[in-house]
Image (cartoon, rainbow, N blue to C red):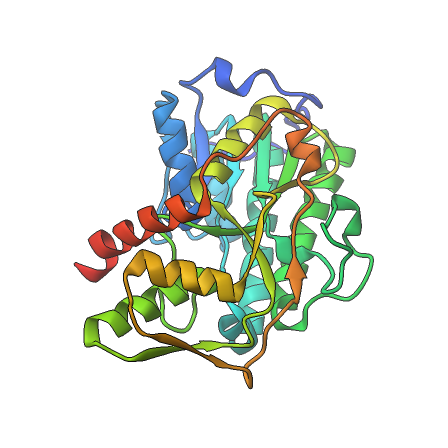
Length: 330
């Protein structure tokens, strides 16, 4: 096993074409999660043959010595950092220390080891929750750090903001070609369908499915149903990741969204239809709504020539099929 060399020369500000060498070592951190699994599917479909994939039990990214040993031994050429501790409002409120500390450790260890082992390009994935609670809509990249965050997920948001700033700092000081992508609300295969710790869409899908299975007359949904949300299929995000690895090398982070929004009430009706639940919906307005509206301005990315492909209705039907095949049948 080699050692990380502090004297490895910094990467050039613009890496060679990502798609030109599909035998290059690509480390996809967090390959079992919603985002990482989609990135792996996309890279495999493009013919990448040397993906470096490690489970948490094989490589604990919160342990600096383990991460350094991995990078020293494997020397990946590219890194896609999708590993993170994620969850919805309930999880963020219940485990604030975990959400800030685990994510800070993962980011710090992977970005620093990437720089010191000579990685040519790194892409860091964050979240739209980095933006202020009442950011002007649609939210541009320039809204970052302009006002207070949404309190229900500030711990996760602060960690992700730190990741963006770390990529920028390592680019400025060390010449590491590190870029950051901030996706909107994601959904799709390999999502977390935990009854308490999942995001709104998979939580709704599970609730409607279980209500259908037991013949319930109605489903209770948190909040008023009025907040507006934007959703992006995770396969579209994976496509954007490859696009950015190939085409973007800049200091600013880049929003990735669908450009379309629905109310939570509309979303609940669409999920209900996808599941085939025939009962009613009861809204519990004593529970928090979260941010009233969150639409990303994706013009920076679409201006480069990228566009999403998966419509929400089609994506929900596909996601429900995956849920039936991989969660219900387990």
